[in-house]
Length: 302
Image 1 (tube, helix red, strand yellow):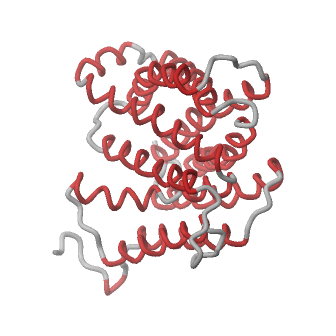
Image 2: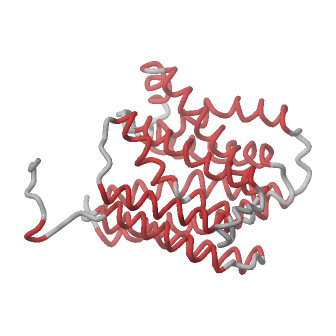
Image 3: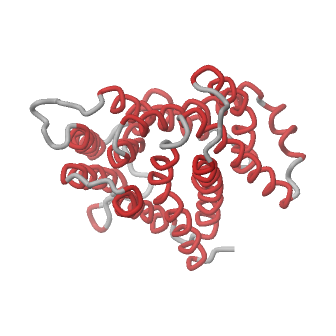
């Protein structure tokens, strides 16, 4: 049943979760290494997702859905949570959180580029403007505004943050062909990704998870970044009478996140970060814009 008020409440709940995770990532990485953080977060999220499926009486769908296309779900699990979060957490470990989270925010622009070869979509003129503006904003952030010197605080960190956008955009491109229940599909991804995460932890780090602060942060990330936020966003879209209005709530998240990074982590927010973020958000708004009124093309027009 459509209910715009409920849609806004669920949407704001999801945005609130996403706004806190950059701070949670950075604080947790002070106690756990990236692979360790991902291991605990993945297990926490998987337990939550299994609990939600049990409550909905959908646990039996896991085996049935997996058998329909096992290789496909194995690939989804490899991308998310395994590769995407390993790369993203490493970027957060190397960069100030404000840089990592804002650079990662360009994933929607990356998605536009990948949609051309993989989904057969075309790029409009306004998309090219958005791409140029968005990646220019990313360069402003990565160089702290000193574009001419191209002096990056951590070239590897910047590369990983931008590389995470390729993995995340690739994950959503694969999901465009998924007709299964979204919650079932996400649970399968985490089930199949967990062995990869365990292997990565053994290879890149160890299982000496002794700091309680790291456990608290990792469990929070698993429950709220990987779990509740996804469910609330699905509920928001399900109840929405106007999906575009709900989708625009996402633009609150990066600004709220910067405020929390200042208050909780103590990061000084660079002016270049704000300028670059405004450029990226403007680019995303340009991408979303559709002509209206007498100058708009009628539905079905070429």
